Each structure stands twice: as structure tokens, then as C-alpha cells.
Length: 112
Length: 115
Image 1 (tube, one colour):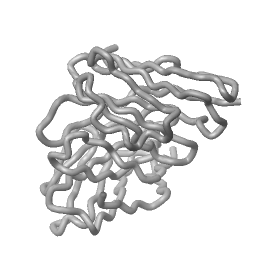
Image 2 (cartoon, one colour; image 1 turned 90 degrees about the vertical axis):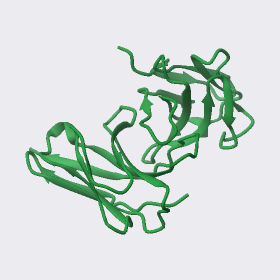
Image 3 (cartoon, helix red, strand yellow; image 1 turned 30 degrees about the horizontal axis):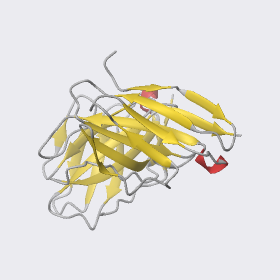
């Protein structure tokens, strides 16, 4: 499986935008980029996913580099509720099982 | 609430005892997954069902671990002869059938403590 690299931790001030980076230099053409987050004492929660084009949803935006070797999850206005561990995960299209390979993720702290 | 439900939320057991956890997926989801998460680590995939068929079980940690989904609805994960190293959060997830990729919905997990 292609691997992802994320910073261990990041901090943001409340109500400011947050850019969470992810490197995936060995990504293949059929790999989707997924982001999940895990709030304390909760199961992971889907945030967003994309293949080649940038994606927006009500939670966040996903910016994918043209060469697809990196991506950035953008939270437009961080709130205290966004404090969580964010995981960047690659999944192979048509893999069937859709098993997720989690790394250690980025722990985001939001400062009031 | 129609999310993924796991029971119990917490389990404390003595070393050597058997434990069983239950997962009720979202009703229209035919895919069900089990993960394990230890402190400070991301979840680790264990096994996967499509309907009642267990299509991937090579990642189960040892032969003490087994999972079933007898009618393609709820699933159980059993750990026999528990060891202290089995202490972890056990997470269940479900997803819709999809040709490509889709989102997985996770339960809140069962926290196992082996004493």
C-alpha cells in the first residue's frame, strides 16, 4: 500500500483557517485520497475524499497537487470542536474491501 | 439514531477469559469491518465482511481472534484466552456497496481492558 506522511501535530487559533498537509509521493493513478478525523473518545469520522480534482463539502475542502504527490485538507474556520487527530489515507479504486490503513495522523489543537 | 452501534462500550476481563463484542451496522450497509486501536496509534484493520461472507481475515492478530456475521446483519468479534496485550479499543465500521470508494461509518468502539 502507498504510504502517507503527515506532521505529528499542529496548532491553530479558533476561527482561523487550518491547512493540514499530507505527502503521498508513491500514490498510484487509481488511489483515492481520503481524510478521516477522530475526536477524543470517538470512532473515526469521514471528512472528505478525492481523486484528482479539488473537492469541497460542508466540513472541509481538499486541495490535491497537480502531480497528486501531496494534498492539503483545509478547514476554513477552525472551531474548538475541530480539535482531533486527522488521518490522510490512500485507498485503491476497485480494491473491494475498502480497508483503511491509518497512520498516526496529525493531532490538531485549537486555541481559543 | 441509525449509526453504527457497538456493545458493550467498555469491558474489563481477567487474563485467560473469553470476550465477545457485538456490532450493529447501518441497516443498508452490506460491508462491515473490524479494527483495533491501541493508545497513541491509528486504527489497525482486522477483518472485513461483505454480507455474511468474511472476505478478508488474514489480518486477524492470532487464531485467538475470530469474527462472524451469520445473517449478514450484526457481527461479533470474539477473543479467546485474552492476554494483557489485547487491551485496546475495538472499532466496527460499515459502508455501502460501491464500485469505487465510499465513506465508512464507525461506531464508538468497545474498550477492552485485560487485567
